[in-house]
Length: 246
Ligand code: ADP
Ligand code: MG
Image (cartoon, rainbow, N blue to C red; front, side, top):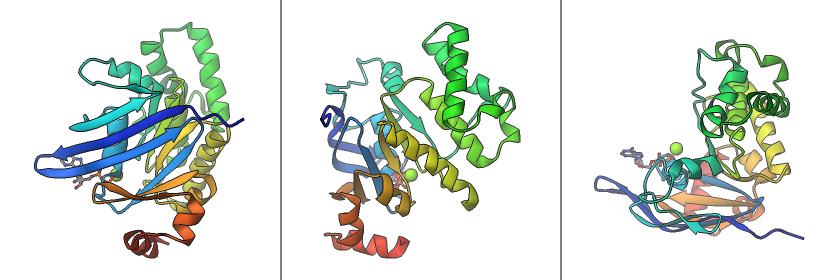
């Protein structure tokens, strides 16, 4: 049976920076286990949209529902929301003076306050999951970019999020390191993680996305399963964008 629980709903979302309207009326729903890929030109609002979903940016209008609950950034505990909604950025921002294992344990130690031994076991499991078990005790400086990003993914998973947001997780990587990070994300998708992924990796989107949302100047102007978006886009602007990037 297909689970239809709604994990994220963005409704009439608006966000401006100064006089610039960056999100103009965005609607998006992601159900449990679905993978939504966001594509669009630079400056179209992709990062702002996902940052509004975990309240790194605060919306000016509209609603953000997490697991069916409308979140009010003035009243609700945003730390709790961000625990549910993990995020991985283009730049990994690992703590340089902490080992890989310590990086993964840091946030749950502070926020979840569990038993330290148990937490360590969990962290090692997560390292296995991202294929870096043997790197537990090294410092980030000795890792490749792809390995750092996989540690960043493990670190985010350590908070046991229900939803994962990715903002161009492979854009800063040398081309030969992109595949290993995409593979890790693909594995997460297979395990049923609910995800919103901003990426320019169209092959990955074709393989993994349940649907692809094309953003243009602050709006999602086309949303469809990948085979439709890539083979038969309805909007001229989607077609133009894809012609440029494919
Ligand atoms: P994308 O991720 O699609 O490239 P962004 O969401 O980063 O787009 O940016 C959309 C627009 O909002 C851009 O014009 C960008 O310059 C502007 N913008 C983003 N963040 C800020 C900010 N913190 N302050 C001012 N302008 C911003
Ligand atoms: Mg961006």
